Image (cartoon, rainbow, N blue to C red; front, side, top):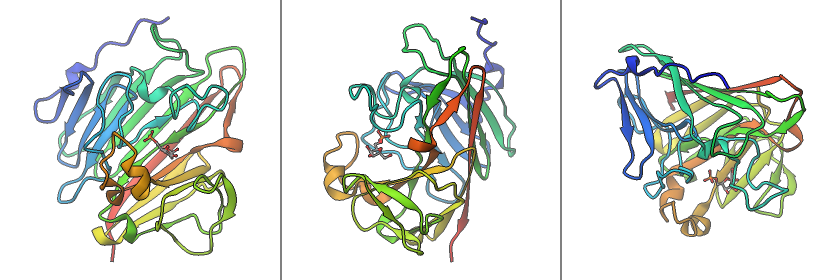
Length: 301
Ligand code: TA6
C-alpha cells in the first residue's frame, strides 16, 4: 500500500482553519473563511455544519446526535456507501453502509480568507481494523457562498462491483410543514411508509404533511426546496447521480429516535441524491464513479 500523503497541516490557520475534537473523541476541521463556516469530521468525511453569514445554518444537525467513533452523526451530509438503508443480504450491518462510520484522512486543500476553500479527504478500500470497501474513496468539498461536494470512488480489484451511493443531506428548514419541493413532479417512487407501494407524484411540488420516506430511482434533478417560513430557497443540482430520496420522520418516528429531539422533525428535511436500487452503479475492474451535489441558497419571495 502506498505511504500516506504528507499531512496538510501547513494549511491550518488560527481562526480560519483549525483542527477540532468532539468531547467523545471525533477529530475534525472547523472553517471560517469569511464566506462560510463549516465543520467536517474525519469520520466519514462528514460535513456536519455549514452556514453563510447573516442566516441560519443550511444543514440540520440534531442536538442529540452522537459524535463518537463508529456511531453515525444525525445530520449534516452523511455519505451513503456501498449500500443504501438496510443491507439486504446482511440486515445486521450498519444502516447506509460503512463509509460514514469509517476513518477518513484529510489529504489536501486550498485555504484563503474570503475565497472558496477546497478540502479533500480519502479512505482506501482496504484499511487496517476496518471492513473492506469495494472502492478507494475520495470526497472534495468546495466551501464558499455556495456548497459543492464531489464524491469519487475507484474499484481497485480485478472483479466487478455493484454499489449504491448517496449524499444523505439533512437540510435545515424553519418549518417543514411550510416547505415545497420542486423537481419531483410526476416522478415514480417507492413509498416506504406504505410497504414500498409504487406511486407517482402529481404535477405539483411535493409538500410534507405526514411521515415521508420516498425513494425515486429516476429523479436526477435539479431540485428546489422552498423554505417558505424561513423565506429562503435551496437550489440543488446533481451530477453523476439519477436517484433521490425525500425523508421526514414526522412526530411518531421522531419520538422513537434516541439521537433526535422529539420536536426536531419540524426543522429538517432530507433530500438525498445518489444512485439507488435499479440505478445502483456497476463498476468493472479499475472503473470509477463521480457524483457531485451543488447547493446554492437565495432569498425566496
Ligand atoms: O434515507 C431515509 C432513511 O432510509 C429513512 O428510512 C431513515 O431510516 C433514515 O434514512 C435514517 O438515516 P440516518 O442517516 O439518520 O441513519
